[in-house]
Length: 303
Image 1 (cartoon, rainbow, N blue to C red):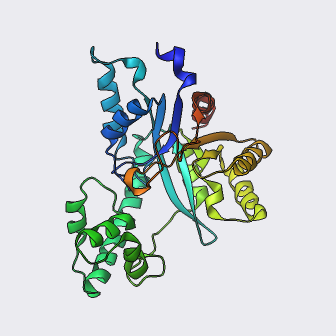
Image 2: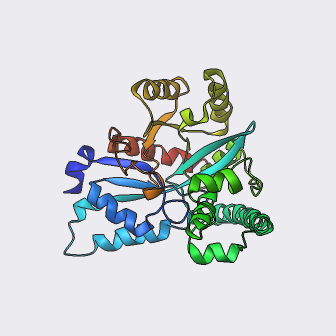
């Protein structure tokens, strides 16, 4: 039954959970994907794979239940979204379909987590010095199982009455140029691409238009990553207009890259942006995922 209607149903290859800065738990995402009629979705939390086991096992257990229509249960694609830096700009690299249990991959992620925890302790000290007593342990207690990001700081400051809005929290305390901001130690896009490939996954340049690069600078970035193993561009995305999607598809074609697509769903943290359909016009077909999966044997033969 499932194979008959797969290509009529949307997929979403860019989704976040409470394990980073989304508001749906991994299990809730599976349930919501069923509600939205998705054939598949990729859980791509920021710099972590902590939610994948829960989402995958939950979907697998649903498939075993006799009272559930297994044809409506989405395929959960293992994913991640790496935060990287290129010439002073934040660049995000998605990893899709990788072996997230691979020991070397897990070890590299552990190093990222250690670096991130050091940064969070420092930000908490700065906030405390600014008159807002907060510890890293306070944040972990308030947001269990989450990778603490600046969105969590903003939510904490708002819920505890230190600011009147999340925007004020960023402007006064944790924004890029605010006094309590501490930059992350970031990998380069090339390093993220290499790590994803080593885990047998597909590296994807996420939402290129959001970087506000000139055409020449964006092509320079892509041209630098193709020899490193970049395999796809997120050419279908929630904020793109028709012209932007066409340009992204042209870039993918020019550099012989695959096309990927997703909503960048964060739940309530991105109001109006919905899973599977973005702001209402997004549609990513199952054929996009099939094409990416068909490339996996080539990737893994090189390991």
